[in-house]
Amino acid sequence: MNDTRLRALRTEYWRQTRNLTATLLLLWVATVFGAVFYARELNGMTLFGWPLSFYLAAQGALLVFLAISGGYAWRMRVLEQRYRHNVNESTQ
Image 1 (cartoon, helix red, strand yellow):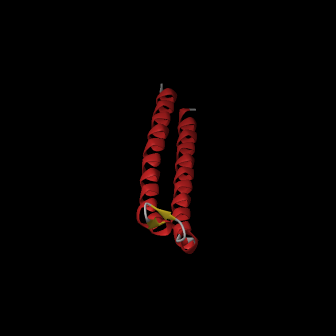
Image 2 (cartoon, rainbow, N blue to C red):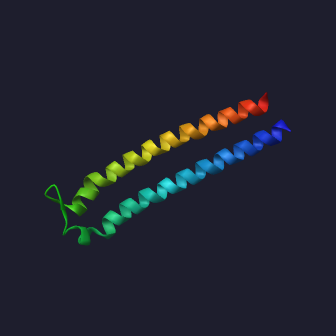
Image 3 (cartoon, one colour):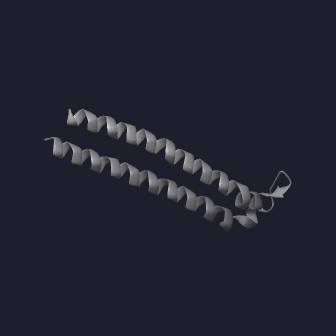
């Protein structure tokens, strides 16, 4: 019984981890692709005196990457705490 429960918990943990990783990777790809693909249209707008396309390529993508990294660390901590709690319950 416990072995089956632990296997199910492990499978659920890795499913959630893969989904989170895929979602954040798609967000990163969309950010980088969007900045390059729409560069001409974004050139007409300025932010702090710089063309918006330059700002997104130089600063915006970096900020998105930092937000993705922080979100991943926070969410993984929550998932690991939940998984650890469920494993401790099922082994007792």
